[in-house]
Length: 249
Length: 293
Image (cartoon, rainbow over the protein chains, first blue to last red):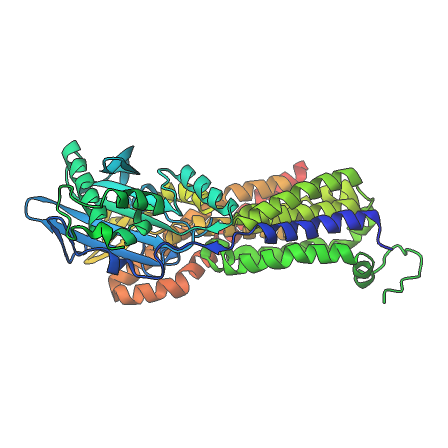
């Protein structure tokens, strides 16, 4: 009774459903390991220490889309006696999909009315042989200019553009992995001079090195965290709080 | 169990059809159920996608109410073409569903169903049903990355218009970018307020209205549709202005409570009323176009 048309068309649809089920990535990789970001980011970073503040352009407003995008966020203002204050925003999403993916600051700042300019790729050198692919840009309104240095991590990749973010996510999904992701954004309110960006990079270095080696994976991915650990994780300028921390784990 | 012994009758009824083509029905369910579940958990539960279930239901209704025409015109389509389409749809579906591209997934599902329909009723019927098919395409979620790009300028327009009008009639309103200040309060015009979210829904509903009420005079439909974008923007200006005034008179807490409960509805209702109003105002144009036809 079943004719050729039914077998081919019906079978085609069944095959599509089956192939989708077979291809769906199932291995969740969460580099935060169920912990809270707040607990792994030091309150003191080099000469900088946290202080309460409200002056943030946040990637999320409560009850909003971003509330679903990010499973954990940290926003802190770090100040130091003879350095620019640095605003730190970390937004972590424990699973990255097409609908739930972290938003890059180009979008986030533009969404609240900032103009984005001077966006450029940055090779942020955190140790002699260790580079974090990052991005520098300037967000400005009529009354506020915010130089920003940020990077994003999707699984073990550090995409520096939206297209890269998409292809890198897909690359992991093709391996059967549901990656997590984080946005690490450092900014200050100052003239966007090379010196300002140098200060942000300096803070970024001190920041990464001040985090315990075992916890760095969530910020920069396991590959970069591993190469950092090989360098003993310390001794650079900016003062690392936990000397010799590289050997603890 | 299926003891269908009668020779194929001109109309065989749905139950018999389903029994006779059980494999097709099972295949369709295997695509439909998981995809609808994902849509329900994702896009359909957000403001961008609220129209999805509505479009699906009314779209199916639009097709079924013309069942007689379909039966009269039905001649099986080219099997080869149907196979090509189902192959493409199957690959796109597997990719889209497995890797979370729900836009591709839903589009592929519709293509698969279209291919099956084509193999039964042929191209003439699909051409006749162009409207329901186009309309059903509105249940395909628009990628967020695309929406962001288009929403941005709209937000600016909305906040500019609202602050200009309210400032013009004497309210203490100021604007920086997309932030509106009224008295001591500060309001951010978000995506939700800016109207592109509802633009897709409004276009779908506008299409439906034009089609059902104006019987698919396509010139007139096109004219009304070009007006949907300005209508959506206007409706959202109404919404943002209402929020600004509520904040001004009753404070932040009331406005935020209101925002979550009713603002979306107000946008939608005012947009629909605007469509009705414009449709009524354009009656002479419609009459003229109908004569021309």
